[in-house]
Structures are given as structure tokens and as C-alpha cells.
Amino acid sequence: MANAQSFPAHRGVVVAHHGMVAASQPLAVSAGLQVLQSGGTFIDAAITVSSVLNVTEPYNSHLGGDAFVIVYDAKSRSTLAFNGSGAAPALANPSRFLQGIPLRGLASASVPGLVDMWFTLHERYGSFPIETLLAPAISYADDGFPAGYRYAMILSGTLQNTKESWVAPLMKTLTGSDDIPKPGQQILQPDLAWTLQTIAVNGRDAFYDGEITEKIVAFSQSHGGLFSREDFARHRTQVSEPLKTNYRGYTIHGQPPVSQGHILLQELNLIEGFDMSGLGWGSADALHVMVEAKKLAFADRAAYLGDPNFVEVPIQSLLSKEYAARRRGEIDLQRAAVSVQAGEVWHDTTYFCVADEHGNAVSFIQSIFHGFGCGIIAEETGILFNNRMTGFSLEPSSPNYLVPGKRTAHTLNAYLITKGDQLAWVGGTPGGDVQVQSNLQVISNVIDYGMNPQQAVEAPRWQHHQAPGTADGGILEIEDRIPADTIAELARRGHQVRTIGPWAHGSAYQLIAVDQETNAYMGGSDPRTDGHAAGY
Image 1 (tube, helix red, strand yellow):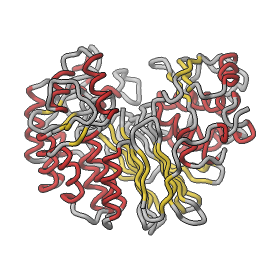
Image 2 (cartoon, rainbow, N blue to C red; image 1 turned 30 degrees about the horizontal axis):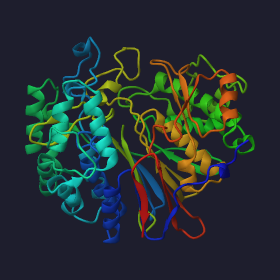
Image 3 (cartoon, rainbow, N blue to C red; image 1 turned 180 degrees about the vertical axis):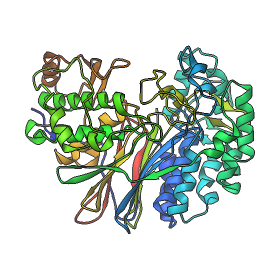
């Protein structure tokens, strides 16, 4: 049986007292850290990181996308959840999509929420002017930034392997050239620089009720999109209490609906009934329990998750310990479930985290959904839009049925963990449905197995891909650093196992821990991506 020490970290843990940033792109980390070192708040730094990522990782997130955030306020020792997802346009009737919601094209885009998120957070927690916070992103868009290896690999791979009509014009806009980008190539995005500068000078309304809105709506109406000025004017970030559950003495703060953050909390409630430490890290028993818990929680997502402004989501029942105990009894320790039903209840993304010298922290995830979103940039704006509308169901009985003005059920979820009212960890990852599976494994790594942040994010992971429309069956992909006897035993129990490369898991984890004795920050960053943790 393997243990945590079987997989020592390849990177060192970053330790700092005053502040820390962990993100998937080095230029964004540096920009955020500079804000902290200049006296900015955790949210000041987060806005800078978020905006730079839009310039340097356009395949993951952009101004035309969404964001979800959880904040820890050290002064009040309290948390808040922010839902920055946008609604379906008023013209988005199901009758328009008799052949299904298209994966690409502006018809698949919901109202963007990221920019409003910046201003909502800044009003509560910001200190530096927005113009100062967006300056690094504006500079990288206007003066250019050198393409990294991952940037060049993703863009060149898309150009070479995807022959759809949206690809070539998108890549030319993103790079300013018809050539395949190379590492070190200077990338200029003047239209995006103009948009960011306009937001910096004229504020939120420039995007939602101003010159930028006019350009977006005019382009949308002439290119098959559904946006109207009214859709943008109605948008507001939603602020609420996070979902919470207790796991072995720690409080997990998760994202409320429309996010699928409840899945993570349900998974933890389910595995809490097993002695995970005693089962042993990397054992067939431990992985089997987590995969089966994942199946049960995802079945509940399909049955119950939707926009709570339109449907009743029985969150209190789903997160109750009594419900977890009932559902836990459905886990067969010797056999993988091949058919999972919802329980009976009573009524390609970017993640980063920031902590400042005052003990405040933010867990921040932003996305345009699939890689490059809907594949369309609005002319003269440089804005790449999401394809989040594809998350809706066109089945009328579904709680996630498409209705104009409704928010779709969302894969994005952010979390943080407290011990009592003291911050303990803040972390997360991109990865669509893989997010809550990765979060489950990393939280178990730090709480059940005592791993440090870098060990926890580097440890080999699994991901379970369900068949479309189901919560069971599907393929269990496991990084081949997991012990071979564990993989063989999981196959014997009925899991459809496929081994993948040693670092091939579809996530890019960032994690900051707070040492409970020294209050020092300890950061870990996933080598499966380009970024790192940095502090001062």
C-alpha cells in the first residue's frame, strides 16, 4: 500500500508571511504580487491577476466569460460567495435550438459576468483605483507579451488540428499573425487594450451600458447572436452565504447554486463515514470509495441542480449528514456501481487564489467554458465570448431547462476551508466536471493524509468521465503514477479503468495553506500547468 511519502513533491513549498498569489500563468502571478507588495488588498491583487489572465490565457478565460468567488474576511472572520455567471439572453427560447444548442458561435453565449464581478468585489474590498489594477493587463495587451510554451502549444495545436471555420480568424485576432505562434513571439491585442482602457477609465457601465455594450450588441445582431442592450443592463453579480459542511473538524465553504459546488460537499459528507486514513492513500479501497461517492453526488446534480430563481434546489437536504448516511449505504465496497439514481430528498477555465498581509483571502475561478469559448471575438473589442449556453438542458422536465433570463447550472466552483473561524486552506482548479473530483482528492490529501500543499497538488489523481446524460458507467482515468496493484484491483471491482500519462490529469491546481501556529502562508502550484505560487 502506498502512502503520501511515496510521491514526494518535485517543487518546493513557497512560504511567506505577508501575502501570496498562486495562479496558472507566471505573468499574472508577478502582477498580482506587485499589487500586494505595493499595499493593495487581496481583492486589488485578484482583479489584477484576473485581468492579466484574460490577456495571457485567452483559451481559458476572457472578458466575455463568468466568474465565481469565495472571500474570507479576516476582520469579521466571515465568508461570502459571489456568483458572477450571466443569464441566457431574452431571445434564447428553446424553440430556437431545435437541433441543439451549438458548441460554437455567438448563439451559444450567455451574458458575460466577469467585469461586473470585478467592480462588485472592488466596491467591498478594493483600495487602489481600478485604472491602476487593470494597468498591467492593458500594457500586456497594448505593448505585447511574449508567448509562453503552453500558449504557443495550445494555439498551434488548435490551428493544426481543428479545421472549423472559426479557428483561423480567431487565432489571427489573438496573435496578430497568420503564422503558427512560437514561444517568445510578441503577442499584441490592441482591440482588447482599448476595451480594458475604456473599462478602467469609464467604469463598469462602459461594459454593461455604454460604448462597449453598443459594439457587442451590434456585432452580435449581425453575426447570429442573441444579445440585446437590455440583457447587459439587467446583469448583476449575486452575493450570498456560502454552502458549508463539516469534514473531520474543518468547515468547507462551497459555492451555492447555480454552481455545482454542492457536489464537493456531498462527496466529502459521503467519504467522511469511511476511515480514509486507515484505508491508506492510493489504495484501491480509498479510490473506490471516492469514485463511488462522486457517482452518487453527480446523480443528484442531474436531478436537482438549476437556477434557484426558477426552480427549487433542495440544498439543505442534499447536504445533511442524515442524507449522506442513507446514500453511503448504497456504496458496495467490492463492486463499482453501473447504475446510479438520484437520492430522494425533502424539499477549460482558470483558477487562482490570493491572500494578503491582513489574513484576507479569495478563491477565484473564471471561465469561458470550453477552450476558446464560443470561438468568436466581437469586432473592435478584442472580447472572446463564452459558450455557457451549452450547459442548459432542452428537456422540459430538467431543473436546468433553458428559459430566457435563467442562469445555467455551472461547473465553476470555488472553495476555502476554515478551522473554527480561522482560515486554513484556500484552493481550487479548472477542469469542468473534473473540478469537484480534484477538489475532493486534494482536500482528502491535506486533511486525511497530512500532505503539505505542494505534495497535495502534485500527488497522482484520477478523473471519472460519465457517459452523456448519466451519472454512472463511463471511464475512470488514472495517472500511471498510482500503484499498479491499485489500478488492477479497481478494474477487478468493475471500474472501466484507463491509465493516462503521469501528469495528464485535466486540472491545474493552486493551493494556499495557513500554518495554524505561525500564521505563515504556504503555497503549492500544480506542475500540470505553467504557473506557480509566489509570496513575500
